[in-house]
Every structure is written in structure tokens, then in C-alpha cells.
Length: 274
Image (tube, rainbow, N blue to C red; front, top):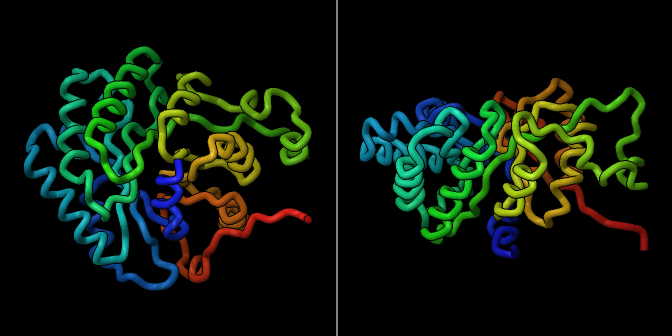
């Protein structure tokens, strides 16, 4: 809704992705808030590390937020992946309640990614759906001020050489775009359900601009801000960043992006002929 737009429209999200809080802290300690520098970090948390020392893990995350803020960065924590899908539900709910509950009013948090790529590797969709249902229900009950979302395991299938994806979408060939999406071990129903429940629409991609454009054309139908919670660049950064600007996509790269390419980074104005 409008609250998500209000929260996310402060500036285009250009960030870095890290596989652990420790890695993010190590990086942020070397950074300063300068033009072109990342403004946010998406960070994969770990349930097992939390379970071994709950208070210590919350303190670690608080340290991460402090160090990140010193570098001019907000943080998007990622709570879970398929790795812990079969963990006892009550333990995962307690984990989500502890972490989100502690930081639910903290402006240093950009948003929450409750489950990153559900059913990417786990084929039991029923189990994955139950985890998602438990997490969204528990976290919503905490009334966090930040947007709450999950990142579905979805990508665009192979586009034939010479395929004009813009024309195909414009003239409604196929099922409005959903027919070319791949959902790994999940299905279209799971992806749709996740996006319907999310305050912001999230993706994870390592695909070409054309494939990302096709995927984003589906996300835009939900009328909410869109974030790529983990972006693995393909190589043509100019083309990919231009695509992101045109599509108003916030992103977290899993490798360094030259700051000179981002000094004046802004979304392209969307307008039409009068």
C-alpha cells in the first residue's frame, strides 16, 4: 500500500548483498558515506547461529546496524532459506519473533525478507507454504514499521534469439507473461501467494536485461515497490543498470559495483505522450 511506497521512496536502493552479518560488518567497517557508495545492505541471517546464542546473535545484529549506519547504509535482514525449512515450526516462529520483535521499530532496518527463495531446493511445497504462513502471521502480529516480504524462487525461462519481449508483452502473447516464468521446485501458485502477501515485491536474479525485464513486467502488476534482494551481475553493467533505472528496481549486488557508475544514479522518469 501507500505506506510501503512512502517508506521505500526515500531514494533508489543501491546496495550490497552479504552471506552473513560478520561479512557485512567487515565490509562496512572500511566504508564511508560517499556519492556512489552503496546505501543499503541485504544480509543473510542464520537460524543455527541464533539458536546457539540467542542474546549474542541479537547483539551481533545490533552491531551490524550500528556499523552499517556509520557507512551510510540501512539493512535488509534475510531470516531464512530452504536450509531450515524442515526445522520445527515453533522454533522458526520464535526465531522470527525474537529478531523482528527486537528491531520492529528500528529505522535502521530497510525491510524484512522472511524467507529467501522458498522451494528453490525443497520439493515439498506444503512444508514451504506452512513455514511462510507461520512467519507472515507471527511477524504481522508484531506490527513492524518496516515493510515485510519474502523473495520467491522465480526466474524467466530462455528467450529465443531475436525474441522481442517488449512487443510480446505489449500485444499480450501467451498468458500475460507468467507462461515464461520458471519456479524451480515450487509453482506459480507459490510465487503468486508470496507476492500477494508482501508489502514490497522481491526478486533474486542473475539473468540478462531482457529476462529481468520480462520478470519485472509481472512484478509491476502488484502495484508495489520492487527490490532485487540479491543481484548477481551478468557482466554488462551499463545495460543492467539502465534496465534497473528504467524499471525502477532497487537492488543489492553480490559483488562490488564501481562507484563511478552510481554517483548520479536515479530512476528514469516515467512519462507518456500527451
